[in-house]
Length: 221
Ligand SMILES: Cc1cc2nc3c(=O)[nH]c(=O)nc-3n(C[C@H](O)[C@H](O)[C@H](O)COP(=O)(O)O)c2cc1C
Image (cartoon, rainbow, N blue to C red; front, side, top):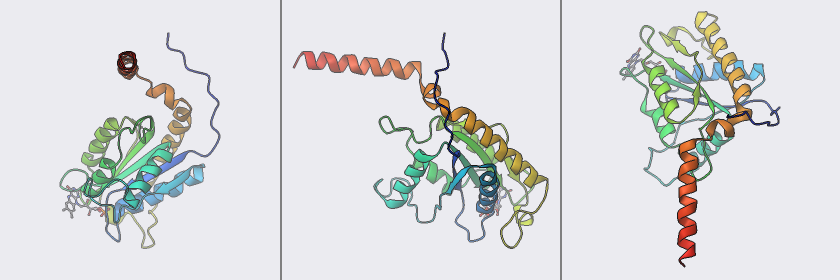
């Protein structure tokens, strides 16, 4: 039987990385991410927001570019993430996708996204839609993250923020608080067991085959 291992409970504030998908000066996907970051900081999380300005297109430069190094280090640091994208032409923007494309699934034993929690959010110019959050959920699965059930989709986002960038009091903001509370809870529940959750039969099998091949090669040297 698979037993949950006894591991010490982590007690530091949950570490959450926020990504957003626009370079506009007044970007509502950024304002939504910033509002969510304030909410979850009040709940007790430690937050970092990555600025995608000047992040080159994926593979256009070597991976030692400072913005790429910064993004990968933040992803590795994180225990949970929030991805906030505009809906454009019925899906996520290239700007959010480019950030995710720069994050490898694994580099040796380092897995910058696997086993982390994820909350997905979108802003739209039109009526309420779920195309971008649905696309982000697919990406979350691809990056082997635990995407929480609740999500935020803000319609007519240009009506939902004050001049100073704070979100107006509304049912959208109430939903945002719900999403951040849920992310906080899932993150503290799951982070202690990341190794257990990432441990897979197929990968153990692959590793033992590699070790056996290596041993056989050494024996013939
Ligand atoms: C090229 C383009 C395509 C868009 N496509 C959609 C769309 O498919 N659905 C929608 O509701 N809004 C659409 N919008 C509106 C954007 O979602 C809205 O302007 C949003 O606030 C942009 O995000 P940002 O404020 O973070 O830059 C589109 C806007 C542009 C410029």
